[in-house]
Amino acid sequence: MAIDKVIEVPYALEIPVGPQHPALHEPILLKAYADGEEVVKVEVHTGYNHRGIEKLAEKNSFYRDIFIVSRVCGICNGVHANCFVRAVEQILGIEPSPRAKYLRVLAMELERMHSHMLINAVMAEIIGFDSLFMNIMRDREYIMKSKEIVTGNRVSADYMIFGGVRRDLSSDKIDKLRKLIDRVIPRIKYYKKLFMEDETILKRLVDVGVVKPSEATLYGLLGPVARASGVKIDARASDKYDAYGEIPFNVIVRNECDAWARMMVRWDEALESAKIIKYVLDHLPQDGKAVPDERRLPRRFPPGEAYTRVEAPRGELIYYVMSDGKPMPYRVKIRTPSVHNILNTAKFYIGYSIADLPVILTSWDPCISCMERLTIIDLRTGERRKVPMKELAGGGKKWVNPRYSL
Amino acid sequence: MGKSKILSLILRNLISKPATIQYPREKPWVEPDFRGRQYSDLQKCIGCGLCRIECPADAIAMKKIPGEYEVPKKNARRLFPVIDYMKCVYCYRCVTVCPVRAFTTTNYFELADTQHITSEELSLSTLKKKAEG
Image (cartoon, rainbow over all chains, first blue to last red; front, side, top):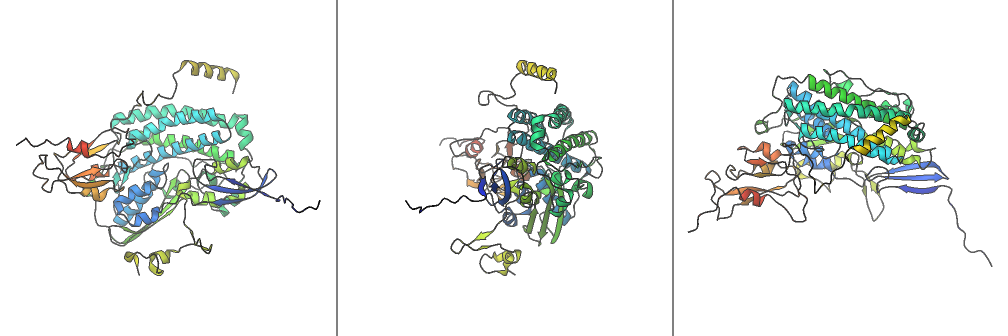
């Protein structure tokens, strides 16, 4: 019998990881090519979660935009709103009172704490330590409760407004917050010790996903990822926005450069945030009105542009806001840290086993909804192209908003 | 971790209550100023529609008050805001921007429903009906 069919085994096996929750419950596709157990190439595919927030912000008024940009990301909604609000405050030329600045810091640090606790819990779940996941999530509830006390909602804070914050903190609320934070701090210390001593965790995390300091700067990595590689980068320390100039805190840096170091940086930062929160509660200034009357806020926005940055839990977040004197912004540009931390890190999966893939992905702390960008693909010809700003602003003919035509 | 520490942890967890609550039967403690369901008090509302303009989620529509209700004189156009709770993001922008502070706020949060729920009935319940004849 003559042979007429041959089965060809490819050299590298293609494994799609995702887009239905690869490691986190967010849609991203890591197309991994494996030679045996070893990963030889990873392609990062995004675009499952695009909502067009930047365009939406251009079509809504400045006041509505505060709440729209808060919805870019669920967990870091406070920092997004803060960054946008400070940009518009620069255009308007108004300054919030010292009390409002301290309250903003309080809300943002609570957010950082629960974000770091969440990703550490998810990491515990990924490596199969489910009871630790549940324990961390239980203690995270204290932070969610404190956020509810401060802002009025567990997750979506909607706390920032031009010229201040949207609700004040009474003295009995401060006492409640103190009690909650005091209950969390020993738990975080315990989990930190667990991450340092537990054999399972150490075996899965140490020497996995190593990013050298030179590579961290070369690929523009930000936030805890860069700080775990020994790069001392923190917008809170370098910009001293809001009340960070008056509050003493340390920038946590580690030199181990692996997934374990990134998780440890997050635990240390959560402890540092707790310290900042306690300082804010002790030193809350009494002068000035923290809550502006929203009915009397300015309705006219002068032409101008502003560029602000803020240290989100995942790294440096940048907003560029441009106003042309109309009630709506001409342009809102959002650059989130996850864009750098996900798209530029495909290289760092190579050489590790398939089982390490979700661990490395989780260690970047990706926020998928923060990083969706748009590419237009013509289905008939298969042509892919990106739409430049010029075309969106009226240079092209097809999708021109008459308002923006030049 | 030493074995004695784990033993004490196990014993403590055996005695202590479970961390989870049986939700529909047992209610979680919600702060009194939690941003929950809000509706406009039509005794105060002047029907200006500012809340509709400012709502970031486009959840508010202005509706005509039915003829059988007695409406205060300041609401000459007989309009009132109806909040679509399925669209609302509970940012309370409508509450803070209202020129007459007409919104009643609650900490009620159990708004998942199979029906389409709006604030129409709640708002109209603040008005009296006209006397017969």
